[in-house]
Amino acid sequence: MTIMGVATKVRVCSFDMAEVPPDGYVLAEEQGEIYFCNARCLCLWAVHFVTNPRRPEEEKLIACELIMPSGELRKFSDLIEVAQWSAANVLRGHSNPWLWNGTKVP
Ligand SMILES: [Zn+2]
Image (cartoon, rainbow, N blue to C red; front, side, top):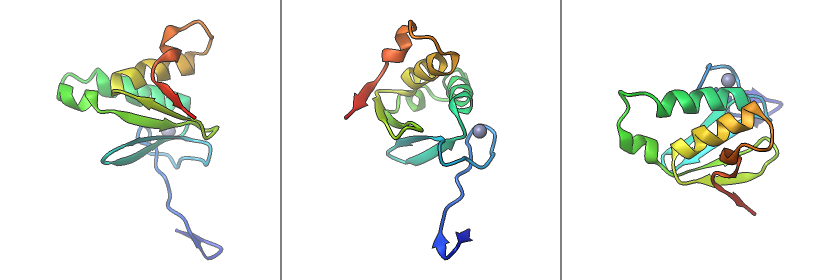
Protein backbone atom coordinates (compact mmCIF):
# COMPACT_ATOMS: atom_id res chain seq x y z
CA MET A 1 0.00 0.00 0.00
CA THR A 2 1.31 3.45 -0.85
CA ILE A 3 0.18 6.72 0.67
CA MET A 4 1.56 9.99 -0.71
CA GLY A 5 4.54 8.19 -2.23
CA VAL A 6 5.60 6.56 1.05
CA ALA A 7 5.43 2.79 1.05
CA THR A 8 3.63 1.51 4.12
CA LYS A 9 2.91 -2.01 5.20
CA VAL A 10 -0.59 -2.72 6.48
CA ARG A 11 -0.29 -4.43 9.84
CA VAL A 12 -2.97 -7.04 10.44
CA CYS A 13 -4.01 -8.06 13.94
CA SER A 14 -3.17 -11.70 14.73
CA PHE A 15 -6.31 -12.01 16.86
CA ASP A 16 -9.13 -10.57 14.73
CA MET A 17 -7.38 -9.81 11.39
CA ALA A 18 -8.39 -6.15 11.62
CA GLU A 19 -6.01 -3.43 10.45
CA VAL A 20 -3.81 -2.45 13.40
CA PRO A 21 -3.74 1.28 14.22
CA PRO A 22 -0.39 3.03 14.80
CA ASP A 23 -0.85 2.71 18.58
CA GLY A 24 -1.17 -1.07 18.55
CA TYR A 25 1.06 -3.65 20.21
CA VAL A 26 3.94 -5.46 18.47
CA LEU A 27 5.16 -8.86 19.65
CA ALA A 28 8.58 -9.73 18.26
CA GLU A 29 10.62 -12.91 18.37
CA GLU A 30 13.39 -14.40 16.24
CA GLN A 31 11.04 -15.49 13.46
CA GLY A 32 9.44 -12.08 13.03
CA GLU A 33 6.77 -9.79 14.38
CA ILE A 34 3.03 -10.02 14.94
CA TYR A 35 0.64 -7.17 15.64
CA PHE A 36 -2.39 -6.46 17.81
CA CYS A 37 -4.98 -3.65 17.72
CA ASN A 38 -5.02 -3.12 21.47
CA ALA A 39 -4.59 -4.70 24.91
CA ARG A 40 -7.72 -6.83 24.50
CA CYS A 41 -6.60 -8.40 21.21
CA LEU A 42 -3.15 -9.08 22.69
CA CYS A 43 -4.56 -10.75 25.80
CA LEU A 44 -7.12 -12.90 24.01
CA TRP A 45 -4.57 -14.06 21.43
CA ALA A 46 -1.91 -14.84 24.05
CA VAL A 47 -4.27 -16.74 26.38
CA HIS A 48 -5.70 -18.68 23.43
CA PHE A 49 -2.18 -19.52 22.23
CA VAL A 50 -0.75 -20.79 25.50
CA THR A 51 -3.86 -22.75 26.52
CA ASN A 52 -4.17 -24.53 23.17
CA PRO A 53 -3.62 -28.23 23.95
CA ARG A 54 -2.79 -28.98 20.30
CA ARG A 55 0.14 -26.56 20.26
CA PRO A 56 3.56 -28.05 21.13
CA GLU A 57 4.81 -26.94 24.57
CA GLU A 58 8.11 -25.68 23.13
CA GLU A 59 6.24 -23.10 21.03
CA LYS A 60 4.83 -21.64 24.26
CA LEU A 61 8.34 -21.22 25.66
CA ILE A 62 9.70 -18.86 23.01
CA ALA A 63 11.36 -15.70 24.35
CA CYS A 64 9.97 -12.50 22.92
CA GLU A 65 9.75 -8.73 23.22
CA LEU A 66 6.62 -6.65 23.38
CA ILE A 67 6.52 -3.09 22.08
CA MET A 68 3.81 -1.09 23.83
CA PRO A 69 1.69 1.66 22.27
CA SER A 70 3.83 4.08 24.33
CA GLY A 71 6.97 2.80 22.60
CA GLU A 72 8.11 1.07 25.79
CA LEU A 73 9.80 -2.28 25.21
CA ARG A 74 9.43 -5.26 27.55
CA LYS A 75 11.27 -8.58 27.29
CA PHE A 76 9.63 -11.85 28.30
CA SER A 77 11.26 -15.25 28.70
CA ASP A 78 8.25 -17.07 27.25
CA LEU A 79 4.71 -16.64 25.93
CA ILE A 80 3.15 -17.86 29.16
CA GLU A 81 4.63 -14.78 30.84
CA VAL A 82 3.21 -12.67 28.02
CA ALA A 83 -0.26 -14.19 28.48
CA GLN A 84 -0.16 -13.51 32.23
CA TRP A 85 1.12 -9.96 31.79
CA SER A 86 -1.37 -9.15 29.04
CA ALA A 87 -4.28 -10.44 31.15
CA ALA A 88 -3.21 -8.25 34.08
CA ASN A 89 -2.69 -5.34 31.67
CA VAL A 90 -6.14 -5.52 30.09
CA LEU A 91 -7.96 -6.18 33.36
CA ARG A 92 -6.27 -3.11 34.89
CA GLY A 93 -5.68 -2.43 38.56
CA HIS A 94 -2.19 -2.17 40.03
CA SER A 95 -2.03 -5.07 42.44
CA ASN A 96 -1.77 -8.00 40.03
CA PRO A 97 1.74 -9.49 40.42
CA TRP A 98 1.66 -10.59 36.76
CA LEU A 99 2.24 -6.92 35.89
CA TRP A 100 5.85 -7.47 37.06
CA ASN A 101 6.38 -10.31 34.56
CA GLY A 102 9.17 -9.68 32.13
CA THR A 103 11.80 -6.94 32.17
CA LYS A 104 11.42 -3.38 31.02
CA VAL A 105 14.15 -2.51 28.52
CA PRO A 106 15.47 1.02 29.06
ZN1 LIG B 1 -7.30 -6.85 16.85
